Image (cartoon, rainbow, N blue to C red; front, side, top):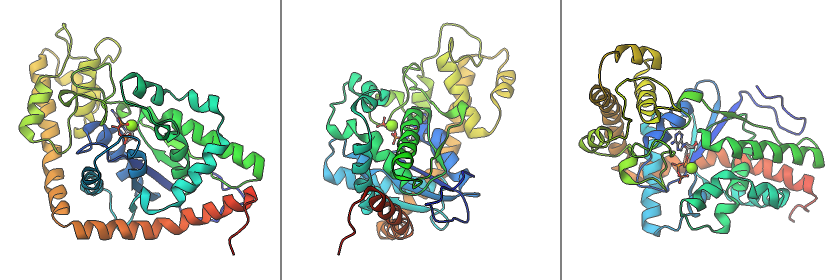
Length: 342
Ligand code: ATP
Ligand code: MG
């Protein structure tokens, strides 16, 4: 467990925290094996905080009705994927104003040059996403999300590594300037599954916002559609099924997905595929994905059929999480020299 700076109230257990944006009609298989599976695992030994990053989603202009629908879908998918709202706080970022408020403090702590070095911003703009100031300051809001909960561990995919680094830098900087106040968090990134690639272009990260439909397996996709997408996945001109991300990114990506969903290590899968062709690989991967997704979709539909219950879960999650980030924000404001109200 991360050592607790003197300014941090004592805690029973270490804390895990993460979020996902409601920026598409469903989470994808990369979000699932890269992050959600680890969220679920950490619930056993951590006090966990898992939120729908709806403020971050505003960096992509979206129709309000669509955003509302996607927010509920994302919450339902967290739970269908195994997040237990009885144990973990499941909530909407926008329900707790302390995220945005602490985000402002983080903006004022960040140097322009530091923000300009963030590769995710540069990649998204290069891919044609129109950039607003919110997209530019996304990492600072993310730092606030994490630091507000004194989080020890942040389960995310590889694309978030640099954002975790800046979060740690900002926490350390704050502590140096104003005295021990914030917990310096650690990224929880599992090497094998941390970067699932597009099926149609295994050189690009599978993304909810930027990937073409054929490149992404959505957790809500109809099984027939999933099979079709996997069968059309780009591989290479060889025949051998072998894990080699540099020379065989498409095949390696499929092996990683199958391994993550079945629990069979990649080298055992390779042995099983000896002498067999890409057709067999694709059939087996499609079976693994469909088997994982079918029970997931049943649970998701049940949850979405009862939006009032879903909203109640989100309210309970905010009630559990809110006092914690409110206390951190109060501590931060005091350290900064902001006068208390009244
Ligand atoms: P966007 O492309 O709009 O940023 P996204 O698909 O990256 O969307 P996020 O909400 O930004 O989704 O990320 C949610 C979580 O899923 C993060 O922890 C992120 O690191 C992880 N993640 C996203 N894409 C992948 C991927 N292709 N492989 C593994 N993990 C991923
Ligand atoms: Mg992302």
